[in-house]
Length: 309
Image (cartoon, rainbow, N blue to C red):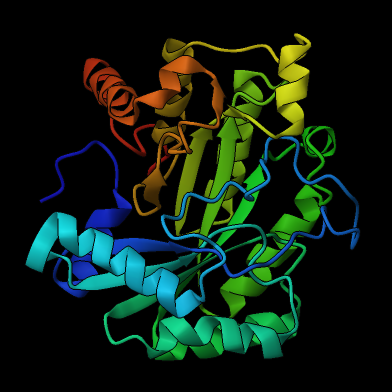
């Protein structure tokens, strides 16, 4: 039974597959178009050398071994409850290759009998129509959703963090993906430099207006090995408190229609890489603070969405 003040994605998966579904993070060895010169160099300013990957298995292992190791870790922890899995292609841009290579890369997940679905992390400028056609083909075999990083709905911010794509490209990718019946999870970062709370809510509103399936909201993390780490050390990145972040997230939830699934409300990065903010190290504390604030307000996801007359 849903007890949280928002539509939690993990509960939606449980309803779909009849039991808890566990996510195994994979690194397929891709790059990004803003790293390899396809569009520019350097990568997103917030991203570390691993492509913000949080997988357990070393990326040097073949995908089949990464998948097996990830499954084994979940089963060691949860025993017989861990029977169904999502293969999450997370690191870097997981459609930044010809379709022929994608067929090879995704085969490890498609062939595994305990993998019930795939999550493909990518960018809106890396999904030409042939790639989307192939993803639609995959979706006929196993459940699939595509994760598009937007981070901000403001082009000056995207330029500042070296995303190397525009809001308009994002909207186009979402519409072409939806035409093929694919589910989409959009990513936003709250707390990016020079962004106001009003700008963050405008980004949330854009994703709501696009009627995407799900959303991930992260607090800005300053991690070792990123361009932002250098900017932070030079005093160029102002930090924000957990209390501010909690207000931003609760405001965001209130303007998101209930049917949009909440995949994440706070970052879950590698603690040994995190430089700031210090409070973001404990995910549970942040989530509990969000829940308490929603309770204090007496609101839930969608509370400020206009109801049809």
